[in-house]
Amino acid sequence: ENVLTQSPDFQSVTPKEKVTITCRASQSVGSSLHWYQQKPDQSPKLLIKYASQSISGVPSRFSGSGSGTDFALTINGLEAEDAATYYCHQSSSFPTTFGQGTRLEIK
Amino acid sequence: EVQLLESGGGLTQPGGALRLSCETSGFRFDRFFMNWVRQAPGKGLEWVATISASGAGTHYADSVRGRFTISRDYSKSTVYLEMSSLRAEDTAVYYCVKRESGDFDFWGRGTLVTVSS
Image (tube, rainbow over all chains, first blue to last red; front, side, top):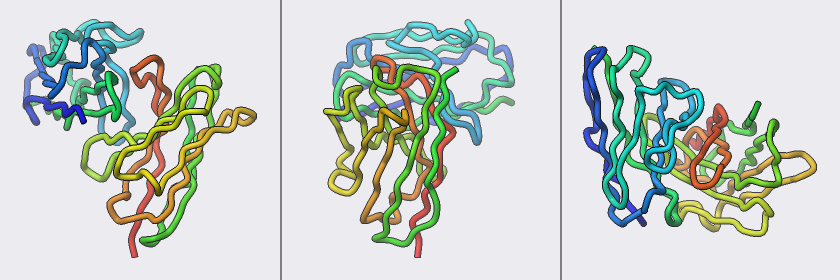
């Protein structure tokens, strides 16, 4: 099983800050790495697919980078509505797996 | 507009069974893989099962293989998850999820399954 490890587990940030969440895979996933946002009491929402491809309707302040085993989700100019838990997900191999999540708190 | 509507969750005792349903609309149901992903209270996301677009292929997490069965009904555009021999650790919100290519592009609101005596 390909284990995805996110860092940090939790971060408290102020609005307008730049935030970077990383995801490291135990085996290469190529570019088959996706990011989701889950707000409290809501279902997850796709933010970025295939490491860096943007999703229609997602604000442009969200971007992704990386390949192989190391990936990053960057939020440029954090807004209060970005308070959520973020998950990475690999679809390179079965079983498909998720990172443990990174909770962002807005100060 | 893509919609995924889960139902069938509830409270059951250890060893019990439940059938979850996911009614879909807004996309060509026969062209996409469908999945179930669960989330235990206060925990992260765990993939449970996948069924191919044709229905010929199914995959399961080790934690549920032999106890859960995923299926689909093309006439109703509905995906099912039959769960048996339920354990306390199966307690979770179960999400029905559409797979685009590899990414999970649409998620339902989820249905809560509680396994407790």
